[in-house]
Each structure stands twice: as C-alpha cells, then as structure tokens.
Amino acid sequence: MRRTKVFLSFITFLLFLSVFFVGHSHHEKRLWRQRELPSARQLIHHFGLTDFALWTEARYTRNPALADFFAPFQDFPAAFEHFPAGSILAPSLPAVDTRLSIGRTAAGFPQ
Image 1 (cartoon, rainbow, N blue to C red):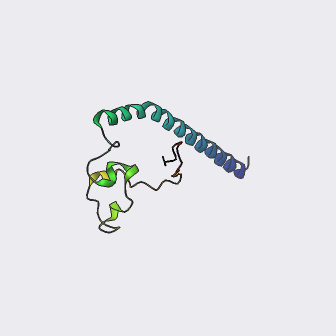
Image 2: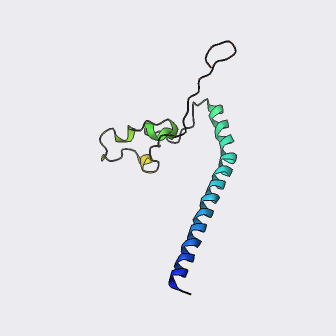
C-alpha cells in the first residue's frame, strides 16, 4: 500500500473518531441536563434564589449567565486575577441566539 493511502485512511479514521466524540459529548451533555437540572431548580426554589450561583467571590463567577463581559478586566486586560475561581471559570461569551419577543395579550397589554 502506498504511503499516501495509509495517510488518507489514517486522516479519515481520525475524522470519524472526532465526529463520534462530538456526538457522544452532545449526548452526554443532554443526559446530564436531564439528570442534574431538576435538582438544581429544586435547590434554587427551596432557598428562594434568583438563580444558581457557582461561587461567591467575584461577580463574574457567581453566575456565568448573568456576568457582565468587562468585569474580569476592570483594572486592565493584563491584570492578575484577584480571585481563585476566575482561573477555573472564564467569563461567558455573549449568546448568539438571544431573542426578545413582545406580544399582546387578549386584554391588549404587553406580556
């Protein structure tokens, strides 16, 4: 067998392997959400929290969904991290699929 065929079959194998791992991780993430999300919601409802907080240190690590994007760089972009949790959890990226829908109810008032 020529070396080019060996190389191309190896690259094809790696491509299929990476597609398998991406699909497997997506499936595992969905299973984790189905298993863990109800208990987190129950915990939030029990304690009367507005949202689930991960850490209590910096405001951008409390809840990544509600973080302001400039908070880690308030001193300057090359500043050292003040809180240990910031080295574990990066600031969240803006959501691309965020939408705002405004509609009217039967009474004519906005929802």
